[in-house]
Image (cartoon, rainbow, N blue to C red; front, side, top):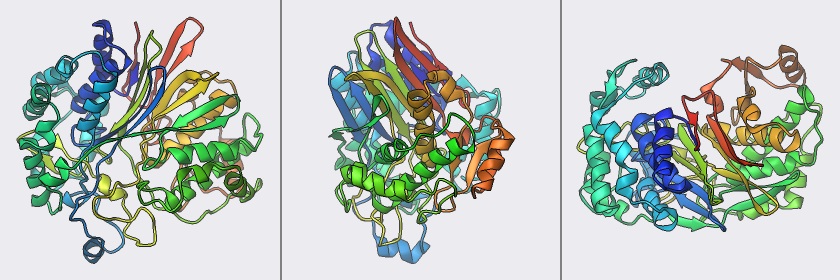
Amino acid sequence: MATPHYLATSAGLVALARGGNAFDAVLAANLALGVVAPYLCGYGGDVFAIVWDGALHGYLGSGRSAAGASLPDAQERHGDQLPAFGGEVVTVPGAVAGWFDLLDRFGTRPFAELAGAAIGLARDGFEITPQAATVFAESRRFYRGFDEWHAVYGGVADGDVLRQPALARTIEALASDGPEVYYRGPIADAIGEAVQAAGGALTGDDLSAHGGEWATPLRAPYRDAEVVELPPPTQGVSALEALRILDGFAPPESGPAREHALLESTKQALADRDRWVTDPDTMPVPASTLLTQDWVASRRRAIDPDRAGTPDPGEPQPGGTAYLCAADANGMFVSLIQSNFIHFGSGVHVPAWGINLNNRGLSFSLDAERPNVLAPAKRPMHTLIPAMVFRDGAPWAAFGSMGGDAQVPVHVEVLHQVLAEAADWADAIHAPRWRVDVGSWRVHAESRFDASMLDGLRALGHDVVTTSPFDSGMGHAHAVWRTADGFGATSDPRSEGAALGM
């Protein structure tokens, strides 16, 4: 299995060693990850998963906006953009319900057992690494004025032992009482009170109305394989659309022409995402339309092989997410992603329970002409996209990445290397990457790229800037895959993760 934090991977490996299956391992790891990397995910966020247990299953664990949300009120207060932090951008957290829904269907071990590592890490603490300390320090400027957040995280530094006893209390309550305590019990009441004190409309009634959704994953061919993604409200359709567009080209294996083809295919798909993708209950066209031959061909025709294009501006989606995956000897594959959205989320911290609430509502548009516009009890468009790759009708790999808008480029870059260029999964994930700013279409490229290649992209009209060699903004990608004699796994060097097996 692979996760973006070595302590989470270790928790998952313990679950496997005790006789658990791939899902048990992923859940144990996710519960631990919400403790040791609260800047990536946690107990106030959402969860999405694709699971293969002999059949293919998709799960959409995203919460809705408050029933009392009002577009006119938000426009009057904020103009054309919601604030990144505060109570107004908190949506109902869907992760807790999702964990239990998925465990009921796929798990073999009790929640209390799988939560053991997370409870210990929260109660007894763990040592902060230099990489994590940097994230804590950078986050402080975002959460000025959020006193409850600062009381827990404001002074965390390299080498400190971080203890979160209130969060341990939450996990223990879930272990003893299940999700009811979160959605209809004292935790729900505390969440509603915290959000309203921070200016939001979410109530305990909104939490009690929550339910996750089982969904049929989307599938599309790419070269000799089939790529599987989740449907809206995720942007999984955009990754598939980009690959379908790219499949009509035959780019060389290196150089500006190769990157240009990948970039332009990705830009067309991301522009379509912001034109069409939102809560599937309100989408103006079904996601399947974006994958039809005629639609894909029209987008391919819009690409100039000799010049960078400027598709209609979209609305950028930042990121802060955790992707996890596992497989086991019985053939189960699990691809799961979980997030509070940006950094620790909204900054709204529930002190009695140690929960950092998400800011996923920031994804909503305040432009009434866009499909992803804010509305009451609506799911926002999600950047979270776990994936699988099938060959010969069976799963070959589970794969995904964090990274907001970077997730579609990461899927395109890594999958093209693996499926079109026969790269090893580990080499593809370790390779240099680029991402694009939706709207301005500026290209951010890691400095490990050859300078002449980047100059070649500039000559084609791309606005290219370089980043650090292993830039976290390019996503933390991980994969597990089937080999001739077992499984392989790799973790992204941009994270502090680990890939372990037994």
